[in-house]
Each structure stands twice: as C-alpha cells, then as structure tokens.
Image: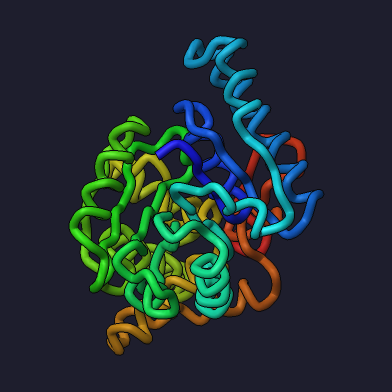
Length: 296
C-alpha cells in the first residue's frame, strides 16, 4: 500500500491525512470545497510545526510530509490511484452510503474502502458496494496524530485477509489496532456515549453543575478530561448522532439521548466547533469557562 485517499478534510480527515503523510505514504485529500482543503492544509502545517517544536519531526521531515499531500475537489481524480480509501465525511448514514456507492464505481477494483465512522454499521455500508469483502472500518481517535488507538471494525462480509492487512497497516502507522465486531457503537462509543449521556442527565436533573460533574470524574475516576468537556471536544452533534444509532440499533431506552443534549444541538450549541456547549471557547484563545447558561 502506497497511495492513500482521504475523503473529507475536517478535523478527522486532516488528522488522518497528516498521519499517513508523516509515515511516508502518498496522500490524496479530497473535499467538495477548495476553501475547506486550504483550511485543512493550514491546520496540518500548524500541527506539524508543533511536532517540530517538540522534536518529533525535523523541519525537513515536515516539508517532505507536506509535499506528499495533494488536494482534490474531484472525487474521481482523488481516488484514481488509491490502494486504500479512508472516508472521514460527516457522521450521516445517507451521505456515507451514497459516497460508498460512488467510491465503488470510481476507485480501482483492488482498492480497500475504509470508513472512519464512529458508530454506523460497516456491514450496511459494505452492502451498497460490489466489493463487501474489501470494506472495513478504521476508527481513529481525535487528535489522530497523537492518539494511539485504531478500532478496526470487521463487517459481516469483510475478508480475513483484508482485516489482517488493515491491522498490519495500523501497526505501520505506529498505532495500536484493536479488532472489533460490527455492532452499534463498536466498543469505544458503546461504552463512552452512555457515560457522556448520563453526565448530561446528571446536569439536566440538577444533581450537580458542569465543573462539579467533570471534577468528580477527573479526580475520582482519573479521567484526563471530564465527560461534559469531552462531549464539547467531540461535538455535541456527533454525540447525539451516535446515541441515536445506539438507540435505534439496540432498542434499549438506556441509550435514549438526554433532552438537554437534543435541545442544545437543535439550538446550534455544539461545543468547541461552535464556540459554546457546556463551556465557552473564545475564538483565538485556549481559554474556556463554564457557559453562562450553566453558571450558578
């Protein structure tokens, strides 16, 4: 595997492109909009500068890695030479299904099609292609260049050979791959999202405030980040989407999203990406404070 195509240039997409380029792969980064690609390349450049300052990369290694990334707004051109396509589009079932239909037609017949989905069924995605044995999940964690885990999700039809290839590739990326089966939420989000949802319910029911809930989990459970701050970091809209997948997939009321979460997303308060969620995140700074909406 030499040529990697990444679909989507948002937080996860640009992180995945950064990772593969840093490890010596040729990367085609594809997005519908040139301005999104320009923003992604600026983010990758800034994040690589941080690695240079920490001694992780040399300046020449950074420049070599950046030159290995080519950007495209045309999907057919972007996947023309792909050995592996990693889809990192928005967490929306219909968008992903349509994208995989197109990828199946446009990518080389030998190419592996992977999704970075955090909850959507790989089996369902694979079923809209003519190559279900070559469809697999690669769920990277955010921030991609830093976090070591890759959940490798094997769909019902994914071949053992393809699974072994992706496990080995993840090791080449200096990640720790964990193979999991294709059930709603896989492992990471099946466990994480109910905890985040319960933290939101704890706030919603007035048991404790935002900082109090996060402090309990950080100091009492040794979590590096409290669940409400983590939800902001993930994106409250993403959390809601995953919880809905869990609720629909299992039919168990324990996965029902908290009404407060639904209201916040509906109103546009999505966490870091929108500037406010459970905390406020002033633009251009690293400071944050509990949102006035939840201040006592």
